[in-house]
Image (cartoon, helix red, strand yellow):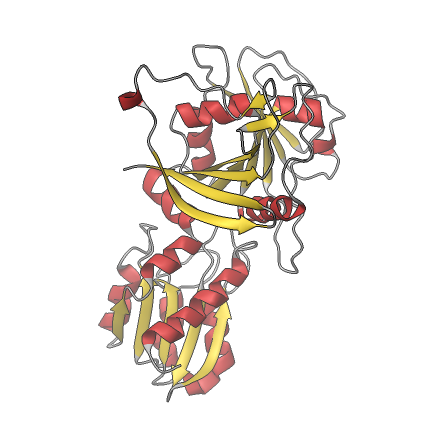
Length: 361
């Protein structure tokens, strides 16, 4: 590796090692290079612990003097749970810092770069910026929109069905698709489902993806306007936090201590205002959510444009007439008024295909 792109690509690979554990902080990687040789590297593993730059500097030791640091995100310039990384870089004597993305956090945004330059360090910004941003899409989105990045997951047959007329749906997708969906569950800060999924399927809403480095399970959120969720539902079994999002009109009900009843405004239909829920999750520093919902809730997120991505798993099978469709969306009054989406990615997953859809600009 003898150029900025190669070394930044290594830093991005390191950053990806923290995607399951760094939240609500971003996943960041750092590589220190001197005389075309890597002398130190690291990544941010967990909130409150050392940042990527500190790990790399510790590994390099005194050799860091006059080295170049490659960092996937602008080094922090404020005292949070850990000291500023800009101070550590300046003290180490590095002569150049290459940064992929500017930090969207107002406490850092541009300030880290200024401090480095004021100390006489050469700074280069924008190397593999798009690739680095993709790792922390939710983090960037939350700072811009004050809400988490929303992915709505749907698993369907080729004829657009998600269950037989009886309701049987386990499993339409292949084992590989199921594992892939658990990967995305674990990458998310929270999983949202409707109370119907909890009641009908006794869903646990946990992430079962094999990895050695993972933080706590994603926060479980159940949309339950009338608090119909049974107190003995499997969702409570593992003791991880659960939010029951309901309205002021729902009667009081006692749940386990690790369950929070979050009362939110109701919409015109008397159901939980999903927009208000996303606002609250943004205030709680939730970067990304995975909506693992039935057809009705998936349709609500979609029709209200409360999503950034629809993740659609298609299985090579037909379930036929009378089976349950993907989403009961209100049809447009004309084709010119249809919802316009674009396929941003199509990937083969086992026997299935996973399509990622985004709204057209």
